Image (cartoon, one colour):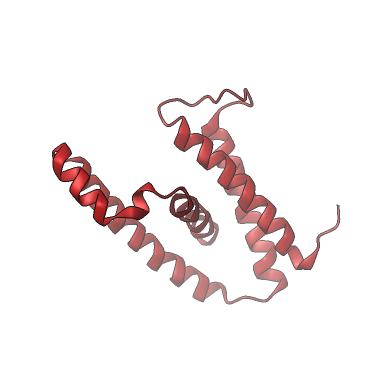
Length: 129
């Protein structure tokens, strides 16, 4: 296989595969198995995150990207994700009526696109750490 566009095509493919297994895990959050029978979703997540890391590093190298900037940006994002996570934990710890009210103010918690974006950004952060 040849690498096209200095690895951008491969990076896009790997992000798509990570998104696919992440969405399967969301759908089957209480188990490590999926009806597709392709094995442990934990292992598949680990594999796809590793693939995204490798493809990202390939793109970083080929485009001579600033790894220090990428690392700093990823640290900022991780901090923001931690804050969002803490906020969502606070929401879960309240009663159901409050959850409904607060969820209306946080529509991104219900959005598959936002969740997918989160996993893509998380995988890129993992790459630089």
